[in-house]
Image (cartoon, rainbow over all chains, first blue to last red; front, side, top):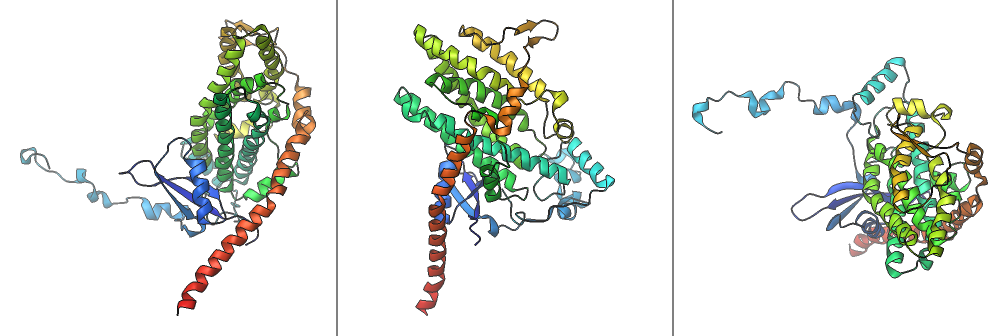
Length: 93
Length: 331
């Protein structure tokens, strides 16, 4: 380590029933301090009731240059319900 | 913020006319630019400079107000001021994090602040002489900052825009607590009213200088507007601020120290007197009354904290080594 304090990503659950959501990042030497700092910096106004911290170096991100190949729906419109014709007589489906 | 693989990474792009045109088209279509995306070197450099300056301003901005926490006149005022200064620290963090996604490290930015290469808002190089200054800072300095920051919530660079949304949500508390302090003093004894008028006289011009040079003299403005880093020009924002503030001063029967300030029916806004740009540039270049003290205070905090950073890193290393050794011992 070159004296650079590691970076952590912070996730907060606003309330039970919702997923943890990425809110930002911070520097801390270990997970204990990261959690304390996240509590101090990201929950000053009742933003949530649970925090996750994850070392930024543990995240693998997809390449934005491949966003097209990865995410554009292409011809797969048959995954969407509007692709199919269902007669009105059948009722709600 | 997802800076993985970016710190120290080679962020250079091949800047062909086609690449620049495609980038501009994305910006024009209001598609946010995200950290790993290709971007022109100038865009990256402008953002690193601007977000860095902004972060430094939040951190240095803690000093003139922190100075008054122990002398706040009541427990309520003290608690609120403490919370405000803590917010500024948080804002600095959000912004440093946003800048880090562009490939600069926190340590680099800190070093640039301490050795004078990086700038921060020159407003913080003025001294806070009385309690009334704390009210005026909240009202005018935070008010001007909000005026600047609201359009930044729509900045084309995603991490900066997201950081600014958080900052803006928190800032309105700052301005309100300031205005309330000013109001109490303005409606108090003759002595209190004189104290707040004196503070207003000293802070008004520096506050309207916060929007930066006139549009004609602003070197970074045009390109930043085209890239949608900025949404309004310096003069447009200054005008909005003055128009919002004049009635707030009138309500308190306080006088803004500009004899040329008057309503202009035709443009639907106030005209103001000439700004002393010599003073502005003097302060920007580091000759403000408090410039040396501010950087000295930051340097002291950094130096005094060095053993803590070292110890915390050593502790983390030791724990990691123990955790790795423990399964082996059990075998």
